[in-house]
Picture: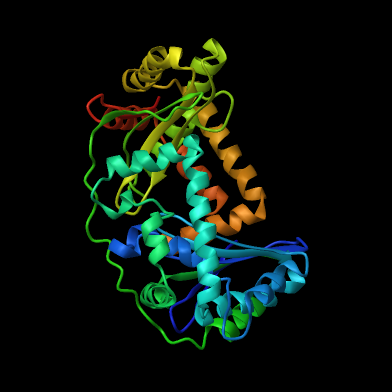
Length: 405
């Protein structure tokens, strides 16, 4: 189903062919905010913005018009551990996308005038984020639980750092970290794989092999806390969370299934039924599992009325305790497995999501599991595994709390 190729310089290609007139393509780079140090905090995200501001061959307008001008969409994002530059376009314009990716990654000039304008854009993004407590609480929670470790860094960086960025500091970070051994070209669309390889070799193959100096050898130590912060918001925002298994842990699939049962996107999640549907205490309540290369986090978020704070936390703890004490029945486990498999299939039906998923998987593991292989792994999870993980993870001494009051 998935086809692979590695260029001589180490850049990997992962591809899946379909019959759509639209192709989704992107370049995944194994560099994120955790790879920044000191005054570079926020740099990976800032590069994601400024990489579109001019190259040796194009001005900013020409970069933006190259894909958008033919009805496509060009975008990028940064996470704690990756950066992705991607595009959606008619399949006939795949070559245009790949050529542009190579140009902005390897030939960006970061003109001073454009960089100064982009600083203002990012500073406004930081302001906007601070005005959105439902988003900000996730980053604050990570900052407290990973205190002193690069995973604690806010992806956007600080106002002070952003104001100090310049063309030289941007180039230095990019040249040190945007290296061929950390790149994956991911494509889902209607093309012949030989042609895909040929285009990638044409536009990416001439750059010399280069390895990164980024060091992730120090794993984070978790900090336990219980904090309440005054935010003067109409709604009280609460976060409860704890350490979880990392990306490479064999129990990752089981924990992903457990998270989906507790507070996944479905309306029948345990938390949604027990707290929103039964009592009407909140509009939004959800759990999330964030696996990193050497750490993992599980968190539960709810936006509630302040009068419901104590009762809501009590109900959350009760739900977690149930997983520690009670085995899922065969019927419950089977239903949860089938629901999760169906959600994954629907998510991958959107080819943009699939392109991003296979790019990240190839970057992390060097291969991509098919839907059939993922289904096999999910159906292999046992009720005992679920209970053991719940007991290991949801211990009261491990749960931390952050409240915006």
